[in-house]
Image 1 (cartoon, rainbow, N blue to C red):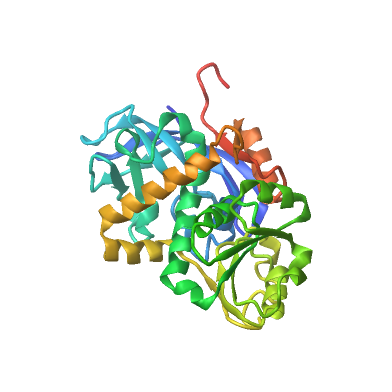
Image 2 (cartoon, helix red, strand yellow):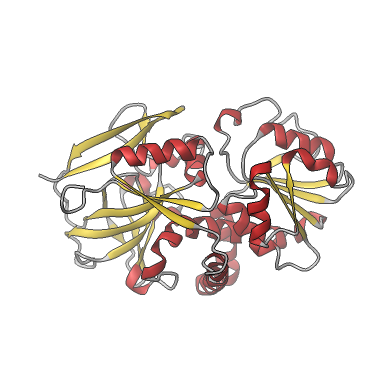
Length: 372
């Protein structure tokens, strides 16, 4: 019998992890089994874990271990067994997976380019996370950029939607965008989009150690360390886009900027501060509002139609990818981690917020031929 190995974290105690191996159950009619070949691990996945209960992220791939959860990740898988007439063994898929060596899907609503997992426990969850893209007909797929796709594709789609949301709301009357955690992938993807807007200044806020990296990207008009907020005039009409969830920084920005038009919260990588005093209703100025990408997808799909939505997003992705993979100044380099111990070590590093911002972690838990 085959087995599946999963990386699990204790809910509410994210630094505690375990590797759990279970015997695979026989497939039911209509199901497929996939081998998860590779997946990215970024601060975005830490946000999924931090909001696992509040936003139902634990529900996508429920664990049989009480009190433990599987963090959803984005990456690539190959179909190794199929009892569905419309999906062949050997087919390659991109989508949302557990941190595991394999998974079982129930394909439904098949088209040449994608299908939906119709597993009953996912029926009430946001549809955008339940879609699996068939690589042989995916307009965003190229075989030589799988690592970059796993690392940046879901984050860039969020970035693109944040930019669209801001433009859709006339930037809330502001002309300056303040982006925290400016070295993070979702932040610099957002900056890349915003930088193309006329009359909008994009200021990246980051740690002193990452100022030079952020400046090298060329997508920020200015980059400041967190202790240099005084370099921006207090009366500047601005919008704060918070990618870190750092309560102290959020409080400082809300206190300093008297003309803060909107405060947008994207995620929380500062796990220990998510419930800290000053993170919520006691803030000066506008209330910090969580951005939920599926809501903007739903709005724009209704307004533009699915085909036009896809066309615009694909065009933006290719434009972004050209900059990220520029041979003279690549923004990102993939670092591969294979096997349970390597995955645990990479997770600990990402959870701690440490490491070179130019490094992207690509992980795998399945056993390669030869026993690796």
